[in-house]
Length: 242
Ligand SMILES: N[C@@H]1[C@@H](O)[C@H](O)[C@@H](COP(=O)(O)O)O[C@@H]1O
Image (cartoon, rainbow, N blue to C red; front, top):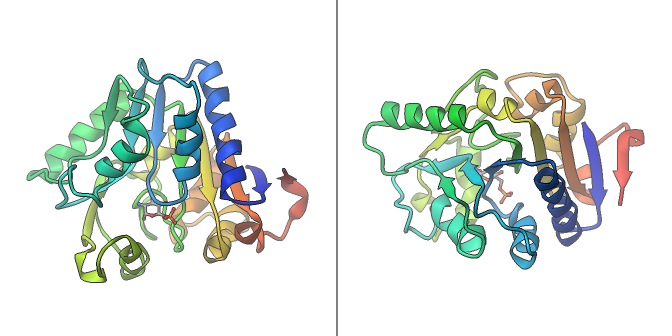
């Protein structure tokens, strides 16, 4: 893994933006995208730039079950607000949170991923080490699946809702197996509350108890962290400090 340590989220946004630019220069066609507060500074850099995604495809990691794309906490809505309205793609896929037949929806999504191999996958990191909504215990070969969110994820995501009761209990997520098929992966994490998960992801055992540790098995992963998120990494020789 290539580890880049930056001063703050703004600097992380610029470093992440450069990786998107490199991918575009390398003829990337399909971008795997993420939600949460972490990717916002990268999206701001993309929106402010002359980057053109109008002939590219995006595939998002996940969506809450039960929320329409027009709900202001749905991930479709988040993506429209933070990126797609300003930088439209030729096609932007997000799981359908209102799908009645979940098996059909997950199969449809797997088909989309199979038909559009992801060139660059952007990831945030849950405090418990989740990537997308792949909670601890998710098999490393998983495809798109329905997820029961853990109490810690529900509590962590409650900050975006009026109260914890309004946080959906279930989601649809791209699987770890699908994420690992991406040509290149960029994971971003900021803040002290991510420091344990960051260290475990990079230096801990590769175990399904720590979903992000699966990234140790991938050949092309870049991690962008701020000082606080990097603070528990033991081997500092591998870190490029910008
Ligand atoms: N499903 C998303 C993840 O994809 C994201 O990485 C995580 C961290 O969010 P934040 O970046 O706001 O810390 O939140 C949610 O659970």
